[in-house]
Image (tube, rainbow over all chains, first blue to last red):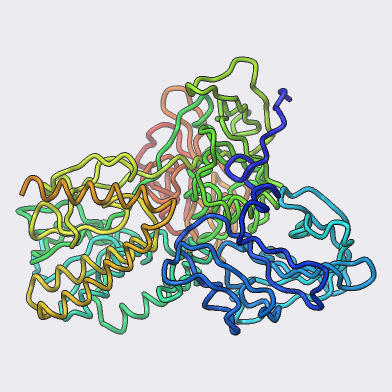
Length: 172
Length: 367
Length: 86
């Protein structure tokens, strides 16, 4: 194995967006502890022509506008946490999150397009944006509907110490 | 040899050709659509992921489903389709010589011809690249999404453009492991949302790296990766091995221009769009008045732009035969050009837009 | 399902499948050996353009296996060099 240097953690080098880059993006809005239900978090930071999230939202909580390269902006106070945008996003770049769901647990609902699907109650390993194992999680439900067009949405709780880090789970 | 006549012949039934045939038929022309394959659709039915774009234009819909919708439209419009039909040459700017079912020669005299032959994958050469297990990324995608067979279990992907990262994701979905994705440039090429999907599945990216050698006894067993310096030279001593049984090459596409140039279409060199392309105007007409082009053959972009270009070509070809009024043509053309311009906006689209503008300018210069 | 005979051995294939896919599903990745040095070759482009995948099928050499469908009883042979008409 060569001495491969510690890579610069940037989207266009590492493949995953770094927290630094996310925090520099005004459209990245992570709901704080005051929300009593999960709301959508959009990690879309490159302006490509795309707006299915805006179209999918039944309550108008996401705005892209006429110029469809504009980054979508979510209004978490309007968002009902229905998850339609999570399945609609072609980039799988949206998930629902809630910081304080229950005792020391945060909540996430993320898009998942692998088989087998996890089952309700199953213990899974949660990962960060770079695929590193962060903590364990418990699957609360798995939703597959025709409307989601073969993108399942996995709902899980996990240690809220890792609220922002966790974005998905290890494939089964 | 059989000799027939048709109004419009569309060569290639991928997204561009299919949409050209549908739009021309909708505009009242009699259309013959031919394809050398046994199935219609080109690369479209391999795109099992959801497309970007405006929701008005089927964004968020998977490529395979868009393909099914287009197929149904073509059937409803009674577009004549010949599969297993290879177009071998175009003579006198109007006669298409084809071989059907690898046996029967047919010459079809067409008033208008639309060439939508797509593009071919590039390759890179390195010691061991001929070993079984080294293949194009498109070959792997064909194997998993059309034939439902895994070409291997541990994959090295060479190239981080959208093709490389999308096929990597699809290989993961098919149950393979992607050991690494290497990219010779200092930055990744594909969209961030695509690279993010595979990164959070644990796949590592190595920028400023390339594959130096494929090793194995009769088949790929290992790949040697090496770092590149800022002059694209291999850095001695930076080599390391990864254990893989498959190496997929995703190093770009080149327009499949043989038919177009063989028929006399004037070429234009467009490196950002894959190399030599037939020059064309905003109506997708080539330097030959009876020949139109659309899709990757006119410059490598995406399926969504191929569909819009196909529609523009089909519309323009039909209008040139008088099947629709000037007003109907102008209104629909404006709509389609607005659509295609929208797809060429933003940080990724800008380069393509400028490249397309250069092609159109070149068309204008020598008329 | 159909039966095909590959280098004398019976293999199962799905109806309508391309020969190359059927072989790879059965674990065979080497389809021919080159003329001079008899080096192994398998699929490369997968869509009938590069001819890396050719084999001798029912006595006919240089058949592109990635775009040719299997048939019941098809006789498929690893091709050595440019093959021979049989």
